[in-house]
Image (tube, rainbow, N blue to C red; front, side, top):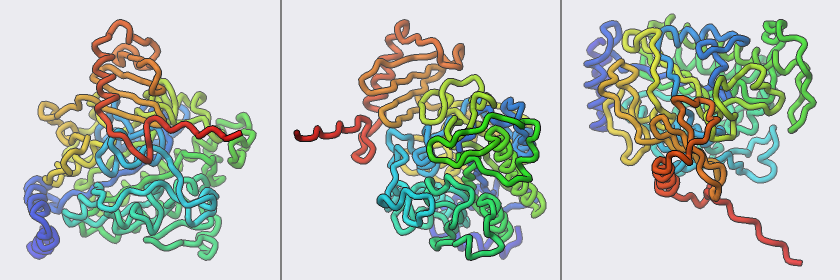
Length: 485
């Protein structure tokens, strides 16, 4: 690093003692070719199953670029998303808290009745509160430029959950995740302003993800000389099933397939299986564009790239998780706390730091991302977060890796705990706890709760004391009042 560049970075980081500490440790550990702090790129798929990638055993869908990340880095076999559905999962990723402590625990829509329509500009989800400390804030304090491109889902523009009030310098994409149910919207959002697609003739009827990927690439080019955190939450392969014809043509081997009748309000696609596969391959192409640009700009060796999915796969809207074996050997799908709803692909590459082609069975979850970034920057994460840094595992220092006592999830009365090899599930607050040994029963088929009362008792305690009640997202939803006769 040139002296003037170092001094410039020092002036930015001097805003906090944590920033200075991060500068010192990163300068000491950076590669000889580039002594700037490492960039971090987190790419998130939407409803992508555990086994929807070639590097996780998928046979029908082609994902060469994502597989290349795994080949050049580390693949996790026991990593979990934050929740079985979108918004709370992203909340855990951003804040470091599991859904027993997180602010957002379900896909609650706000904005009134008009906010439910796909073309609405006022729709959104329950917002992150003012004063929330996100992973984007963590990077900002260390002098990074931050950008998010894709689907937000944690508060609409103008609320406390606006991404630019939650640590991001730049945002482009869908603010409301319900609006993201179409890939041909009439508008997106750019830095707090509506981007009307029909008023931009070059973008008219363009596939939204093409626009979003282009903005992410523009961000990398614009900030190639600065440390940056790039968050790319793609909406693929979430329904509706829509993809440009040139991508659909790549999967003629899946034609013909059974037509979808259009239930649940989505526009039917005549070739739903081919469309699902084509969407994932198109996303893989975007991933390849990002990694290729990092290499072109000489940033590859100084960038940690992570790819994952926000929850498990679904059969909604014409998707066919069974045909693609999207969940692999796992039981359950999106919306459930079975492993099929929450265990996700998670791969990371950092040339020269992460061993190529490595695999790990370390048990981690989305709420580990913030503490991992904190250790990367040599700063302390917020006190009380549920996550644990996985940086030792990424860097091959397994003897230094701390482990979770347990992982916890909740959604609409469902609760689940991962406790070593044990996985416990309670589908409703008053139901009995089911217990499974994932070491011998990865599909959660054999309930062994009766033979292990001591483990069940530990789980019962976690279900009760390992969470705090939320007024907005109570575990037990109040029963509707009886109508007076």
